[in-house]
Amino acid sequence: MNDLMAALCLMLIIEAIMPVIMPQAWKEFLHRITQLDNRKIRIAGLVAMLTGLGLLQLFR
Image 1 (cartoon, helix red, strand yellow):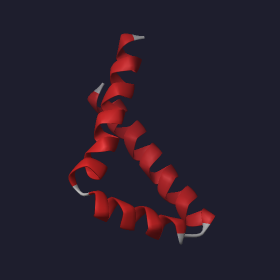
Image 2 (cartoon, helix red, strand yellow):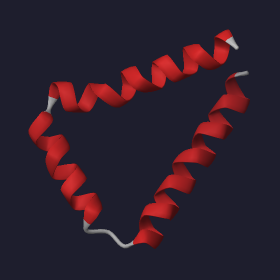
Image 3 (cartoon, rainbow, N blue to C red):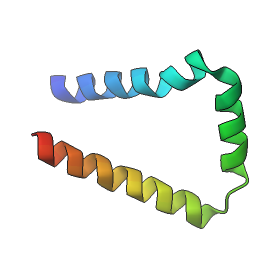
């Protein structure tokens, strides 16, 4: 359970880096994402998820 909580905390920290450092670029990035069709967003999410899973298996 502690590992899960640590992972969630790290995720929040990493997710917050971009808006804190470059808020304007973050807003532009989010605007561009809203212009994509759902299929591209799903593919990008799947690639990110599988990459994270692969890296997790590699380092554990």
